[in-house]
Image 1: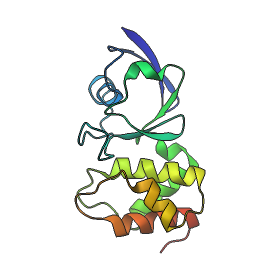
Image 2: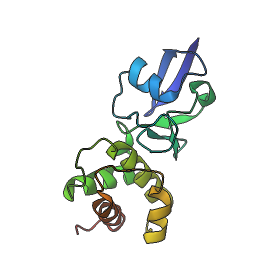
Image 3: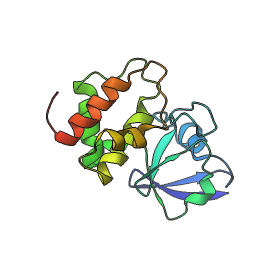
Image 4: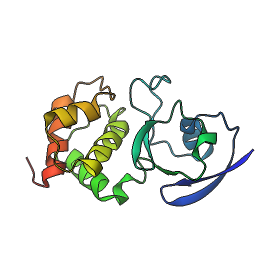
Length: 154
């Protein structure tokens, strides 16, 4: 079944069953491999994308639920003000260790800063709680979110 999606501001026509998770449409059909498969249960956050600016888990979101909704992936988040700040902070502070969870972490952090430009620790904890980092880079992640919010290098 043909579906038209708006991904990172571009219209994409895809052939996929409506119950296919968005994650697999992005990775397998469109070749956009920045969004990662982690658990497949919406528990780890590796597959986080934005739908209409809100972070969602693409591993459980059926593509048929996305008509007339804007999807932003890690490949497009740098075009947003919050996303660009977060990506810069991630690089400045060398947040990434293995990197597997980082696209989901960045997507959650960008969504937080888009709605809460000056988050405190509890805001950061709440926004990032659904993103698991096996390498334990949580201290660097928090520092990067704070740097992106302030615009000042730590």
